[in-house]
Image 1 (tube, one colour):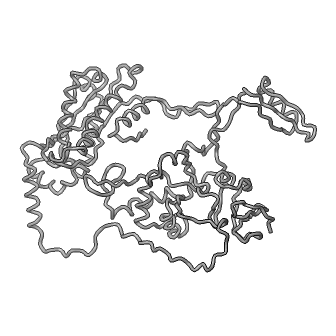
Image 2 (image 1 turned 60 degrees about the vertical axis):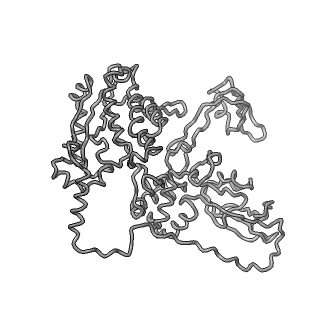
Image 3 (image 1 turned 90 degrees about the vertical axis):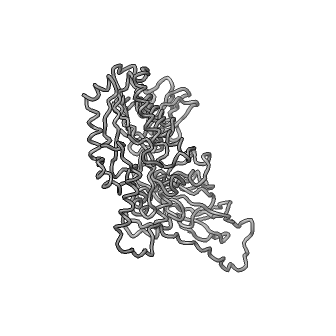
Length: 527
């Protein structure tokens, strides 16, 4: 099972530990289903690390944030996860692989990295003196050297040949992964229960190796090998410039004869739809060529990815767009990397269980009625069957006029009502998955009732000039007219002229009623 969290947040660390150690049960009606059992963690690899940069002169909030992620959250995670199962698994130990390093400022310019790795040595020493947590933890402390192609060392890959020539072994990601897994065997864990296990995976890095001199020599060699100057390209890899919108000129309306009381003035508009904002929705409409394929510009992909939280702008350590793992994304790669993902998160698609709807079956909850409720049934047999389920709180009587029977549930009786209703369809128009309106500056107080499904407009009584409404019975709460036809089938709204006032009116394909778009919404016969 995967659990997501911001490991720089102590609250998220505690919440993750609580989620792992507690069972999750979903109750539907009278049935309880175990979704996730309570788990007792066995292995912990606290290897999460963002990019680090900065010298001693840059010490400040950024350095503190690095130390919080690389050190203090690691200590908090060890304490919280090892405490799980204290009462049920007395002899259990959490085996932790502490990612040590010989780097104690050797590379330079890597922020708090060197200090943090020194502090991990202190954690190993505290294992022998702090029994309150150490008795449920076993430690393996590998001192990891040069690993090629990683986010931390990838920028130094041009020095690999020079470093290996100096006698230092470098590791591939597959090789170092094999060595780390070897530290999780039963034999190593038994040794770590007695005292922490140290593992030297430095490959000779740090043993009188002058990395600064190697870096300078490699740079000189690269400059000397340059034969002919390469003509500079006229283009750069970057996002294309977005199209600049042109403000349309006002049309010649002529003399306006409409009464000001009947005139609607739209000061400004905003849109959030299944394709995000009005800009990205327009791009999607122009890019639909049939089927599931939708062409978007690089600017449209970037806006959607930002709105979904896939990309975030950060000013440090280097200004640019960063992904969810904290890695810098070249803006020239945004279109190719995120285009398919944002398209898959938008438009009409299959409903998922988002705690608002139940895609598979209705979920019911038991409630007690606070007042008497009466309803009709077709015959006496049905009425008596219902009464037998709760005779102390049920009354039945015959309706002499209609021939039906009236069933009355008295106040205090038990009833089942839907907590989440299953939809009659499995696909529909939804806001982009993980779309967060608060990114646009909309306050949380306005987004508390965010449903994820655009069932109507937020600007009553105005409606679009032409629209296909998929669930009109759900739109009546958003409109001023309470007489919207309660149809479950889709209805096509067609606009015409009102026979009484010549203003815009509406009719539907499936309903024999048309209403005027004036604020009074006067009904007039359908023709």
